[in-house]
Image 1 (tube, rainbow, N blue to C red):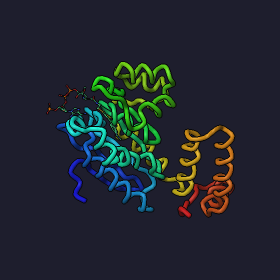
Image 2 (tube, protein in one colour):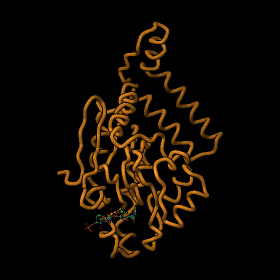
Image 3 (cartoon, protein in one colour):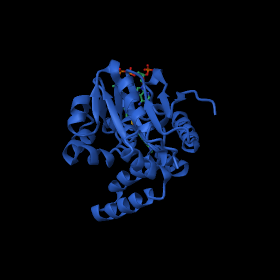
Image 4 (cartoon, rainbow, N blue to C red):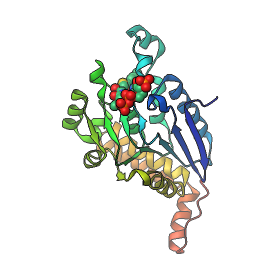
Length: 257
Ligand code: DAK
């Protein structure tokens, strides 16, 4: 597929997807979502890649779904087209994804950042779900994941008023894991990505799966799942290598099996 709206790079076990539709502040048109999905499909089969970075420009991570494309939609076209499905791929991706957010992360932009596993924000980042101002409501998890990140009261405030929060507020509410100066965003994101990339790929996948289960289950079900996944690591060579390396006082050499 020809990539018209994003730039894709891969090096040292890290893949970087840069949303690149600057004239529209990276508004997430159908084609852009297709391109993200296409690249994620490739990356899920690519054992050389351990971690993915999703980023935008300094001005906008993504200013939401493309309002031009949505303006004439009718209920029947949503039903026929299954508009929602293509947006689910990021949240189903098994390997770690870091959202590196500068500028606007609004509407669908905030939602895809929340589908990622870690959000690192530049100081100029702005998060919000302004769909209410367009006479609609969030549709890619904004009413669900936001509550789990920032709690009910703040989620209600953001969704009902369409207001935004800045990076520091997002940090205080637990929406992002770190706030860094804009000029350091790439460096800080890469540092985290490198740290993750050096781990064993199958163990990363299991660790991510265990944490994501907490969103979908009760504590006791999540604990049972965690225990099963923990036990399954004992079938992997990398688990043995990790423990032996510690005991032999050397860095582990993971072979991803
Ligand atoms: N869609 C289309 N074009 C957009 C856009 C968007 N979301 N956001 C910005 N643009 C375009 C502007 O129209 C403008 O185009 P020109 O006028 O130059 O042709 C250009 O980008 C630059 O924007 P501005 O001139 O407005 O730039 P400013 O710096 O003045 O303002 C802003 C930046 C981000 C505050 C402003 O652009 C803005 O408020 N943008 C709209 C933000 C918004 O309401 N986002 C939520 C959209 S609704 C779904 C999944 C997800 C969704 C829906 C369904 N399914 C799975 C079913 C998500 C819905 C949404 O995200």
